[in-house]
Image 1 (cartoon, rainbow, N blue to C red):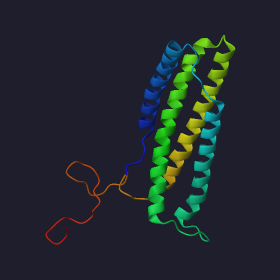
Image 2: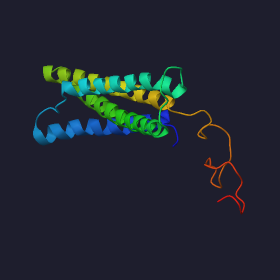
Image 3: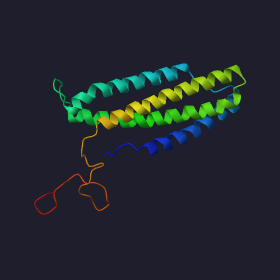
Length: 173
């Protein structure tokens, strides 16, 4: 597993922003109403960000091996890293979508409903950004020192790090 790159998250957010902007316009042209942005979207995303943040706080001492803590099973650490990667990508997509929607609603700030939807979209985008930050930190915590992602080591023919450290000869499969 390679670590999440911030550039990937920015690209995902930009693509989702374009989709969010277009979705608001399409919704209004097809249904003749403003695109609904529920306040509960931002509340749910904020609760998710808090859950990821507290998971990172509780698992960090166990991963480091502080005295008085039980060590983390390697499979649990791998699953936690996978969860963090998925959450950061999902958060970037959701943040981008709601930022695009907020941009579309910024043209309707003279209407009370436009102001409300603009604020709700910004709150949802801000909460999604918190999800990205918390999950990015959780993923960073789950990295092992010298796990091959950023440390020099044996490389395959394609230049990628290999999972083996011994040269392949007739004795090593």
